[in-house]
Image (cartoon, rainbow, N blue to C red; front, side, top):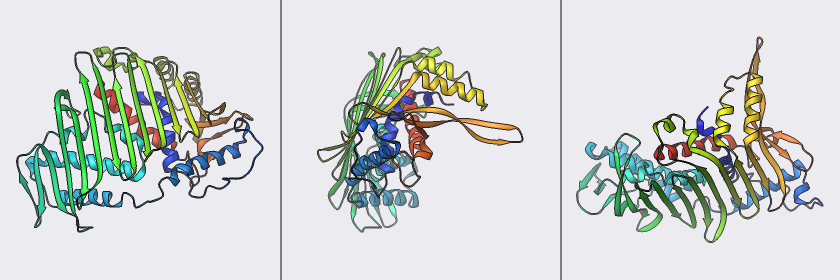
Length: 414
């Protein structure tokens, strides 16, 4: 099990992604009358309410073609750069730029907020691309490079749209040298900006601001994407004693989702060698919260990351006993709840499940369970919602992705 799998308070953030990407297109039950109060809804009534809230978010994305030109331009760029090889010596500029804009495309096409947080990483593609300068122009089946200027620019005629596309990235301000993911060193500027335009019309801008202080061992990074009417924002900061991650998604002035995560600890940005081998020593307690359009809130907390890690890792087999003990450890330290702006309506916890049995051998694993306050009824998240009609059907997949993002953050810190 990965260590950061134990940071389950952040599962609240992943649940929001499910609401954005896995809601029913048919909000059945919306508008139906009920005499039940919000804290006394049946399991089925809660399901309808979850779907109705998710549908409100989905309705904000009423124009599925909003990002069509942006995504086409990104795909065309990747195709031309791969098919008509860029200068090998400058290949790093293409690889970083391509990966960066593919991430932007994924964020805009799937409303993937966890990816927004990835843009704040000091070891990410934005800063790798920003190490290069000059202009690449595509024509007659080849790329031409011209040196000079204070930015990295790619310009080409889009094969799929027959429109001129310009991708540009530039940085300014003082630079701080950090170690990169690939064993190299990267200069992190205070301010960075990137944009993509088609026929002179800007379709997306990305702004990244970084305040790194090596002496104080602190880092504050913000990334903002403006695409069409949507604004995606991710913030990350870390000090010796605490770390915070925030994200939000707005359409014009309408808040669709806001979320925060916070962890307390010690030596978090200046660990010892022993800490690097035992990272749980760096962290104490953690909390996370997600607000969906001021209609539903998911709150979570972990009272002791270190104790949870130590207890859960004692039980590593797939036996029923070890799995039950592991679930008990998770449920002891992790608290995840759902509310509609008032009392808790449901909690989410782990439970053991038999995956398969054969010739006397059994394999058990943990699964997520939702338990309702009104009657104590509990359901696995997979069984409570239909695959094609749920705000939670992709919970685990989205959580795994979020887990990877936080693991990358810790790698940056360590």
